[in-house]
Length: 224
Image (tube, rainbow, N blue to C red; front, side, top):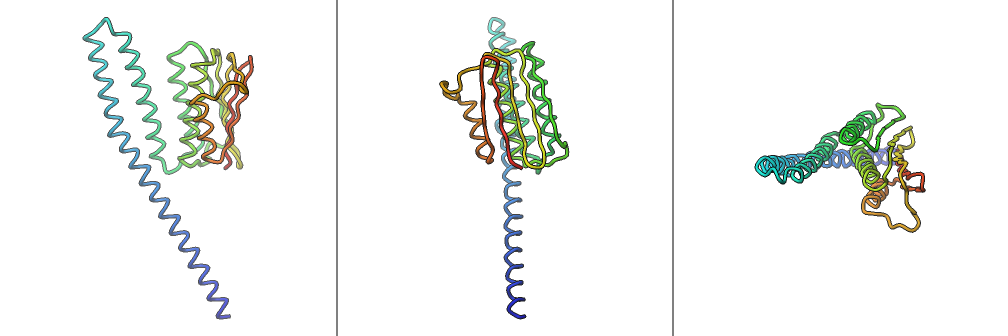
């Protein structure tokens, strides 16, 4: 009886140590995320804001360069928006699936406002209150962003579709376009697609791409 009690006490002590270790790691990660968010906001964010102000001033004083400076200013604005999205995610201890999809919808709406073509639409299936880890949410957001940007730049498409779906076991992201496509077997993956592949693999996800003359599909799936 005494031996069994000692074994139980030892097991309880071991579990208690593991719980305290995991709790400590959680708080360390939370602190690191908040510190990175502050550094991004106070450092890069301030520098980009200053850059935009300088570009506005230069465009005002040099009318002959107004178009080129306006393009640079728009690029800087886009970078600021991307930075804000990253900071927002880093500040969240956890996110819901609904929050992520609405954030994606907001970004795609802003992109669409500046273009007549291609048309971009997003659909989402699954429970909006499902919780996602910040790292997974960040990777999904960046993968979506990279995939859509690639389609805009290279596909010559008229339509781009972003579809998300989640259930108890997995979360899937499909980015499709009706562009000119390319030979996946012969063409080396560009930096953007390689980046998507790495982001998926880092979180034990899968990455797949199919392409033809009818368009390109990028499929990423993460286990939950």
